[in-house]
Length: 235
Image (cartoon, rainbow, N blue to C red; front, side, top):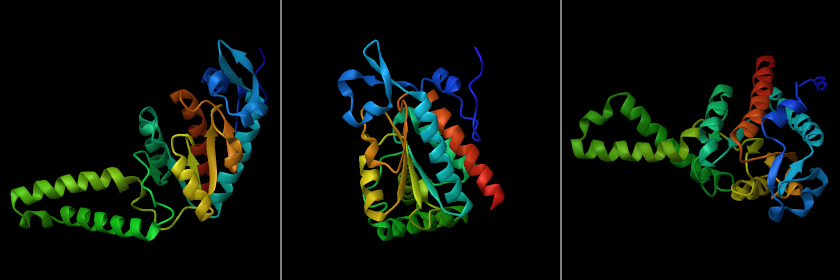
């Protein structure tokens, strides 16, 4: 079989198929607005039209590239347990902020309060780094260490995010619907993987794809990573 012609981002339909990008949810979970991105049904599972996905991904990557070239910031969000390590690794490789634990309400809409908590977290980290915890009793140090662990879990991925980002990439808008709502309120552009159970009209740059399979999400995040790193080199 001849290789599918690639575009400027090397998006390949065959590679997407191998990664399971085309496999949607069972037919009972279909969101009506996703019909336009489907090819049909196989074993009660909707099949996504990867030619359309490729075009959507290309548009999303162009937008992400422009954001990075203008020195804007992109926040990666993926709170599903199987995807957490993948999202975190991608963000760290690209030096991007990320959220892989539960989204804290107000991260966008009440950013000043979040900033205060991050400031406290960083001060506590610095105190530990400089050996300042040695002045406390063993019991107090244990308590502070536990607090640091909690703060790291909540704010570790966004502790260097000094302002609300220009864009957010969401791996699953059904699970992380609060992120989507807050982004809309604050005018943050949304790029997201949209599985067959989600509403693509809620997102600025939807990418019709399987949001459950690690390989599917990995394929898309690898493309995001390539674009971000390339754009940052040019800035």
